[in-house]
Length: 198
Image (cartoon, rainbow, N blue to C red; front, side):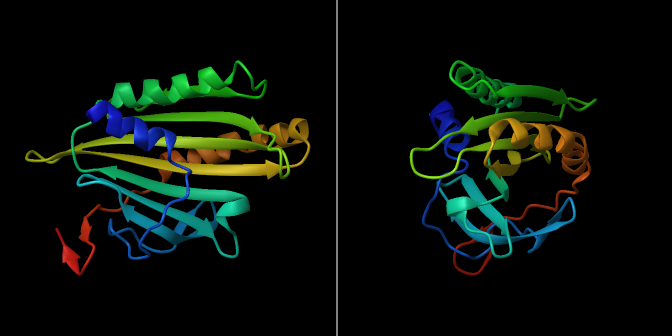
């Protein structure tokens, strides 16, 4: 069951879903990341322990975003190495058909965090082709009484010529990685859907 829930998180991170606009995780709005402000557009409690929130820059839409920032919080213990491996394997599977797909893994010195960053491309039947660069930051928590797990995701797309897009995104990788590593995570406090903190 745990694996099934986590696979849902990994493979539906950028999916569209009906959600509440109310912040559920006590995250300041807007989020400031790499000099851009991201505003909460969707927040949903997907299960008893799974919470997801999506943020976009002002005037951007999910249908054709250029940048996105997401919080996925699981109020339960998750195997961080399994989570990282599943994300890496997802990109590796895509490499069979996507010549631009490439994945990297970085581990924090204390082993409490991992970052998986990767490039993928899409050429939809309807719409412009694009290359996307994603950074997933995996972090585990243990306050002595409750173990929990957080995934931060930043994604950036460049539409049009894929070769040029990849070249531009490759040059932006280092500063974006630095921004994700240095991003200060607020204290997560789960909010009830009605009015208060759990």
